[in-house]
Image (tube, rainbow, N blue to C red):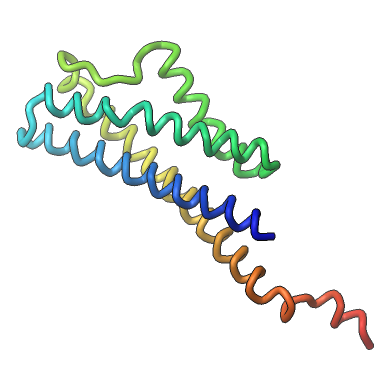
Length: 150
């Protein structure tokens, strides 16, 4: 039971990391739009965090697959495939010369990812809370033994 809780705690930390990366990328793109950063700085700052975001999300998806959490795996699979498609087409990094043309699209993409990661965070937090409560209150909540005793 403790391994179950450790797994979900790892997922929670990974999900918080993904949220931090997406917030940072959104802030950089917003600063670029407001002319607080020049295009070279903004693309360098965003591009530095794209691959770590991809690998962390892939690690979560593969961890769900290997541990048999099929529902979570199927929810994470579309984003996994989207990231693989971006890498295969070599469109995962921002281009300095095209950044202003694609700025709205990039911001919308990251806002969609932010929503996806927030939904995932809610599900994972529910699992962590349920796991910790069941670990803490396992003796009191064992209704099978008390129900079968007449």
